[in-house]
Structure formats: C-alpha cells, structure tokens
Length: 186
Image 1 (cartoon, rainbow, N blue to C red):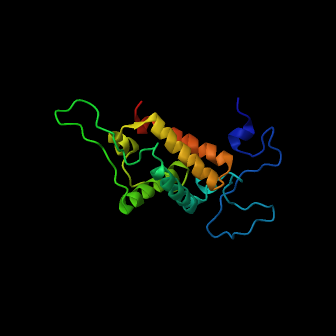
Image 2: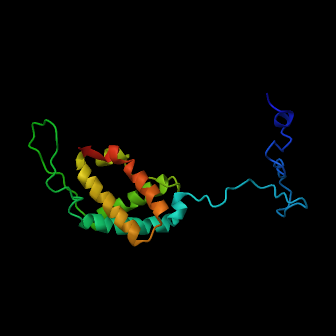
C-alpha cells in the first residue's frame, strides 16, 4: 500500500531524509539559488558522460576514424578494396570481382559515414547520412577473419591514441554488435 507522502508527493521517503521535492521555476525567477539552496534546475547526473564525450566528441572520433582508416586500408587482412571477392549465388552472368577504389573522394565519404555512425552509436548527434549498415555491406561478402582484422586495427588505433580501457571496451562492444549485419561470408 502506498504511503500518504508518496501519494501526496510530500518529499522524504523512508531512506530519503533531507530530500525535498523539486520546485517549478517561474519564467521571471532569477538564476541565483534561493536562500534554502534550491536552484529550481533539473537534476543532473555527475560524472556520467556519454561515450561520445569521453572519446573527445566530434574531434576525438574524427581523429580515431582517420587513424583507423589509414591503418585498415593498408592492412591486406582486411581486404578493404575487396580484391578477389566474387559475387555469390546463382547467376547467368559470369561472376565479377567486387572492388572498392580508395580515391580521395571515396575515402573522405567513408570517413564521413564512419564518424557519423560512431557519433550516433556512442551518444553523440543523431546525424547519419549513409546507407543502412546491411545495405552498405551486402555485396562485399565480408568474412569473419576480415572483420576480426578490422577490429584489430581499430584496437591498435585506440591504443595509439591512448584511449582508456573502459572506453575501448565500450566502443569495441558497439562495433562487435554490428558483426551480424556486416559479415555475410561465414
């Protein structure tokens, strides 16, 4: 059964001595705290920054993506340009190799989409202009070893940029959660 103070919203509960109700601020009220210490501002969690902020925001994620992209593009295990990968399935046409050309424009577009995706996935601004993740990777026939190599390159970039272990684990867990949408060749 609810206690009367819970129903009335009187403030203090059994383990809440000294806690009072928040008061609604009138538009004409000054910003200074009242004599009782109330600021009439919303409660805010302290030391609870989004991963986006802990990674350095837009600039931090952009630096990470720039370091990672160069590393992954140079890593033959990732096979970023998709050399030797052919289309699967039945087709009357001859299988044709899927390739990606790392022109400056293509690399810039890739980096833009990666920054937007990582910003969104880590609690940053909700702005993503790329294709849905499955559609973007559908015809690439990415294998688990290739995905693992890319994750290893990301880890090396995180280490190089001295990102703390807690943030590394959180980011790598986010990236790992995309495996089912990216890896099509088991």
